[in-house]
Length: 589
Image 1 (tube, one colour):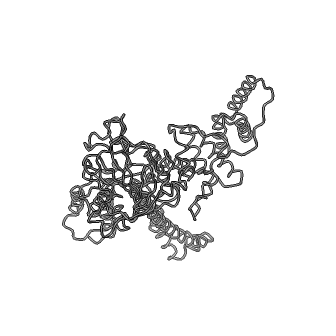
Image 2 (cartoon, one colour):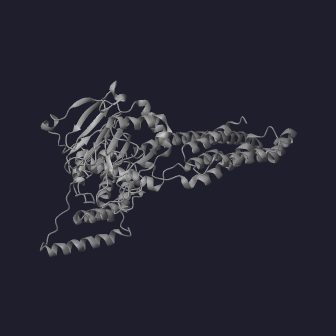
Image 3 (cartoon, helix red, strand yellow):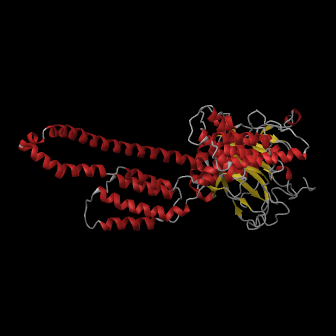
């Protein structure tokens, strides 16, 4: 079977299987379907490419239907998986170009026919009897109307879009959905809040660490604001609708109407408690579209509400709306569920880090041989203190570039939305405060994983036999993990009950990429910020020697502002450490 289409088809199916998108598509299922195609051709040794294309297209559609249910959204939570979309889009652009070329070829052929027939009809209509007096002209007229016009009709009815539509159908299963778009928009707002970036900076693509700007159009800003509005997030709705209006007033091209922007903006400003500005914006809306179905009613409602407020305050004169444009600090951001939000986000920006000169003087670097571990004697690890109390250390050259690439290669096809363990049930579940994708790798799967597990054991002196599998995480757009504990607290006695290995005594975190901006690991309790550095690893104990939790180790992964963040971590549990890390004399030793 030499057909190029067949080779592409087989490559596509193998790619589906390799990416673990079609879990229900076993080799047996595929082989049976393929044999059916071959058997349907009988004993013919050669059959047409078009026939094979048709048969394989049917099988492709069947396979898509079989595996479509297993393709999950949340593509935005992993930059690693989003890179696949870049190549998908490139392939679609090529397919689109081929379609355009086919349409242009078809149109050129039709134009050629039209030009030729135009010359003929001008000559024939000038004196039809003289024209038809020539027997050749009479014959050619019969031929044209009987045969050639039918051929032209067939040419016009040809649809060159079939190939492009088929390609779109195959690729559509990988496309982000509405939840992905909404998640990516909310991620931009999260970055905006965490790093105190105004909408104009985002709109112009002016982000730290970026050399190539990517701009947001008026319509992009409008869609951002609408996403926030639909989530009843009027704070961000105001910021983005105001930016859309600013760019619109500056003369930028747009599809959305100014009336729609003012409609959303005025009501969002009202929800933020700024009645004078809401009235001024609504008056602008009425001036643009006096027949707007809501504007008139809203304006009367806002004016009556403001009048009542003035009466209650014994004021007769309405203060004019401020002329200053709405900016990042115009309105106060509403409080949310996270009590240390300001401290956490400040640390992510590099503010409030409590690294004093006195503390720095207590930090050292050294060679670490794992208490004379034979595997570390000839090549000890380079260990640096990151923090004194609780003690956090960083190991240099903990992973080689080749090991990192192998781990990413093994993990990428399995990446799924990262989960957290429900403190009440112990069941893994997704959470809005953890935005990334993760995969779990066993030591038996590849010598590299076994070697990494052994290295962690050699460095820490703790057994990894009772540890959790190596977890690989890739952070997507604005990827983060808000402040959390790695260990289970006293009010969560069943968090790790199903594992039967006790609590998480320590965390070993490998950084597998550099990050251009953001992505730090921060500890709000004592004001530490640790920045990713490819190939290094950080280690800390979550529990005191007594088994009591060290509540100072509550930490977070800051949102990735620019770049792609890959990490892997090993959560080491209590069981098996009785003689490796014996109890201390006090509760907090």
